[in-house]
Amino acid sequence: MSKLSSTKTNFIFNSIYQLSNILVPLVTMPYLSRVLGADGLGEYAYAYSVAFYFTIFIKLGLNNYGNRTIAYVKDDKKELSKTFWEIYSFQFILGVILFSVYAIYSLTLAPNKMLGIMMGIYVFSSLIDVNWCLYGLEKFKVTSTRDVLTKILTMVCIFIFVKRPEDVWLYALFFSGGMLLNQIVVIPLLNNEISFCKVSAEGVIKHIKPNLVLFIPVVAVSIYRTMDKIMLGVLSTDSELGYYHSAENVIRVPMAFVNALGIVMLPRMSNMLARGDSKKSMESTFDKSIIVAMFLATSICFGIMTVSKEFVPIFYGPGFDKCNFLFYIILPGSMFEAFANVIRTQYLIPRKKDKIYVFSLIMGATLNLILNLILIPKYASVGASIGTFVAYATVCIVQAVCVFKEANIGRNILNSLPFVIAGVLMFVLLWQYTPKVSNEILALMVKIVMGGVVYLGSLAVFMGVSRLKVARSD
Image 1 (cartoon, rainbow, N blue to C red):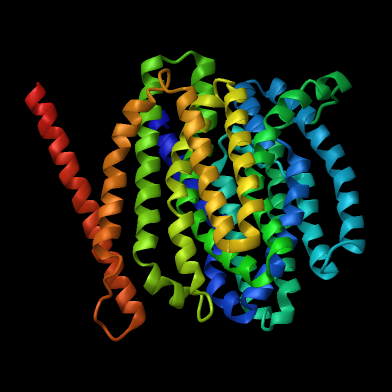
Image 2: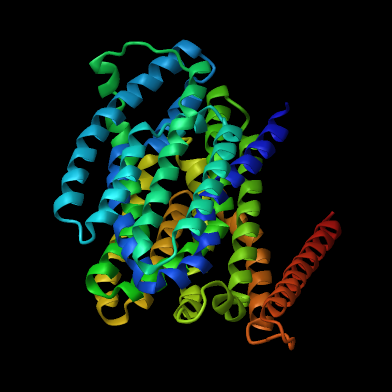
């Protein structure tokens, strides 16, 4: 299989994988918002956020460091096996310690102990999470197939068994059980790639420092993706947390595709650098990825904002009108996040420019934390949304400024403008328009089609003008 077709195939499979990660909350949200209500969703979001922090401390920076390191050695099976066991040994030891700490927390300090115990299964699953190795080996078909099947099983269980507000613990059980099953089923598949071998303490220790360096951005990102929920739970109400959690889930839709692109291209770009591929070919790959990422982010971001008035009551049901306003604040942040994702996964991390990556995320996290402390007590979910948007924008701007010349950021900003302008035009022209049909779902469908026509039509005009300018210059 050619490199291009392999990359496209990996992108498709990883898009499926990333989408399956948001499939359960997205597909089940209309049902759960009606059954559990904003309070129940808020309780769940708080318990999940605490458990999530334990999982990231177990895995540290492995999603990036492990992925990159495995990609560098994947062509040498002996070195691959040695590297895997050196990295995983530390993950397992740390996981056992932190899982023990979480067990004590869930049994003594958790506000809802049953929810805490159910989320303990999720924390335990991170002990055996070796997705970072599968990513480095570019085994995206395995991860996507596994995820789709387990997520379907999880959704079926939720629809069958979660029937009352008191069943929020069952929701947590099915989510956590699905995550554990995800990790268990792929362990036998690694036997064909990895051989068991003994490793030295020195071999394990040498991976700790670079792993910790790439853990700093994981913590920084978690501040504006997870800590904001904990702060909302402490400084505001379960209902406000429920609104924010529901609205923020939607931004995961455009970012699922962008994350899929980044995860596929990180090992590919790392391998290109290791092989010494030409600078021109790597620049071309980077530029094309920016275009794909911005198309995905702007089309879905502005598309959801355009139809939000029709979408929110159909999707969430009564009592979630505030999500409509939160969309307008949070969703534009996906454009900044998409642009930064390409810089991070295809320029900074493959070239081991980890300091720039870490610095940008520390800046974003610091601003987010300050804004949350100031805005959440007074503005609740709106304040958290503002903090999240500012964090996304800050991270992107800092990364772009740091590599502006060497990564040709100016050229890529110009290449991105048509997508942003097309999205803004779609939103401005159709935002206040409501199709005059009796059926709410039909009205939503009509508006989606109209938005697509405006967006794609605007892009066609921009591309036509661009080609005309090129032809005249020739």
